[in-house]
Image (cartoon, rainbow, N blue to C red):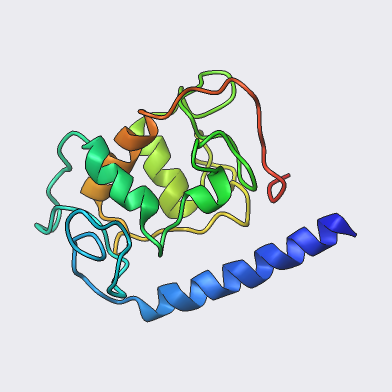
Length: 164
């Protein structure tokens, strides 16, 4: 019964997030709420720092990545916990045995954008929200990856209660 309740909660939450995402067509690439106020005010969900079409992201900035992590429309900690060690979703610390420490940036980006595992073949947890480039541009993705790299490593294998 508890698992069914958790699954129902994920479905409702996922539907709500999908509805929010559908309404987000902003191409603004500044963090929601302005500088220094993660997720404060505004309704735009797009996050990042580059606006020039196909330019490659620069090295990630952990401070800017913290803004992406905390953005109310993205809310990474709501599933992965503030520590990134997992809660409802899996451990995404840079642990090489229990997290994403063996993942490249490209693999991380593919997981966040398309829900693919590090081999790029198997779908990750179906509860994992996919974040298109309109929500997290390439630079913001690099910043987020750099920020996760600052989290304390947890070697505890945590799959999360929403992901089998």
